[in-house]
Structure formats: C-alpha cells, structure tokens
Figure 1 (tube, rainbow, N blue to C red):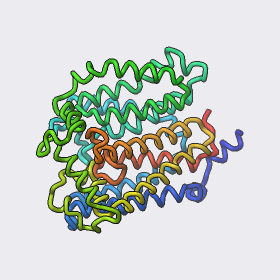
Figure 2: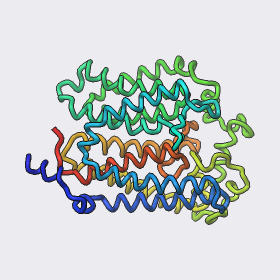
Figure 3: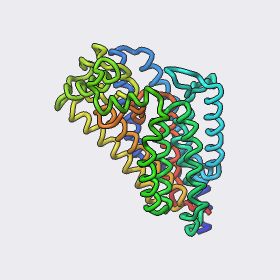
Figure 4: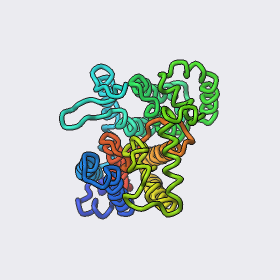
Length: 374
C-alpha cells in the first residue's frame, strides 16, 4: 500500500495527462462550445457583451480547471476546511459590504472579478463535508455530536445566503450538503424526521419570506393570475419551448427570444432559448451530454480508493443533477423560479468558476484514483 501511495504521489506530468478522463473532458469542451453559440444567439446573432464576456470566462476558467486537476487529490483534502472557512468569511463580507442589485446583496468586487461567494459555496460545502466524513469513524456517524457538527457546517452558509436574500441558492447548497450526510451513512429515519419537521414548520417559514419570494410561489401555483407581471416570464418560457416543436426553429430563428418576449434569456432561462431553436431533439441531445458528464463523475468516484474522493465525486455529481433538474423544472413551470443556472450553459462568472473548480477536483480524483488518504 505504501508503494502505491508513493508512486501515485510522484506521478510525472505525462502520467497525469494520460490519467485524465478524456470522455469527461470532451463533454465539457462540447458543452462549452454549445454555450458560446447559445450566448451568441441571446445577443441576437451579434458578438456583444454577453457573448464576449462568456467566451473570455471560458478561456480563463477552462485552463484553470486543467491546472486544478494536476494538483494531487491530497491537496484538496488538506485545504478543504480552509476553502470552506474562507468562503464563510466572504459571505460575511457580502452581508456587510456587498454590492446591491435588484434588491439583493450577493456580490463583492475583487477588482479582477465581481464574485458571488454563494456559488462557490456549492463546492465548498461538498469539500468540507467530504473531509469531515472521511475522518469520522463509522460508529460516530449517527451520534448526536456527529450529526450536529455536520448540520452546523450546512446551516451556517445557508443562513448567510438566505439573508442576502437568495432562497434558491441556499436550497441548492443545503441539498448538496444533505446528500453527503446520506452518503456518509446518516440513517434514513433522521431525514424522515427532518422532513416531517420541515412540513410542520412550513407556514412559519413562509411568514419570513420576502414579498417577491411569496409572489414567486403564488405565480408558480397560478401563472395566469398576473400574466403581464409576475407570471409573464414563465408563460413566455412555456410558449417558447412549445413552439420549438420536434426539431426547433433553427439557429438564430427563435421568435420568442428575438422579439424580446423572453426576459433574462441569457441566465436561468437559457434552456428556453435553446429548446426553441433546437426543439425536442436538440434538448434531448443536450440532456444526454449532461447525463454522460454525470455518469463519468460517478464512475471516477467509484474507482477512487480514497473515501474523500468518493464523497466529493458522488456529491458533485448529485449537485450537477439537482441544478439541471431544478433549472429545467423551473423553465417548464414545474417549480417556482428560484434562480438556478444551467451548468456552463447559463451566463454567470461565479457559477462557471464554481463548476470548473468542481470539474477540476473530479479530474484530480481521476488522475490520483489509486491513491489512498489516511
């Protein structure tokens, strides 16, 4: 075992390159190329701000992902708690002196990038809990202390993100954390008790929601109650997706998008534009691409010798799955609008950065899949 660890720690650059998952890399590249064309389409067939900005971010974050992948998986294990606590400090910074926009205070200006720390926390929470359960003895997993510590790791960032306010991102952070608890061996009965408690306290929780958040829930239940106001976005989204038909209207030919019936089409509603232009067939092909990405991440977790790598890969695969399901359900009117970007495809620097960091750590796990972490 010692010999295996020594060899895996001393991999040459060529060996690391050979150990990369090229199917996963190819899928990420294809998704990145598709995202540039879709962003070009949101700019009306011109290379304007969103297209330029999205392309530049890809040129920066994709090489960053590769650089991250060449770090030994032990590095991510060692720095997991540090990464988490730095993000907690950034979330506190946001609450004190963040940039305000559209009634929310979610961003900080780091001069070289306007960062949304809550997006990075989606990765930070998985890293932190992966290390926690890697270290935790099996007999302590379901102990009172073991569960309280894990829940505290989740609740601290969730509360900070809710206060911004950003209910959607806080739910996604919580879901990413809870899946690690399940993978770590926490008994199902605790999840069931928590779910029942949540349902009982739901009316109390709703009373604390912001007016626009309550309006989103009411709009989800009945979009036609305010078709020219709160329900406008989701109604237009359904019309655009339905009008795409089987094969779509074609590249740069989406009428709902180009006649500006669909606001915010470059962010959370990017799938609506894609579906209108490429139809059901194109949408299925995009989903297949995402399925391959998720399956490759799960495979890397399955072949990894370290529990830390397994926890991270399985947790990240679940997170990607949840982001996709929530985004698609949102644009189809199956869930309230909660602000969940589609990985890589949607416009957003912090979201893309977080996703690429996640992919980089997964590739690091693949390169060092034979390595154990004591």
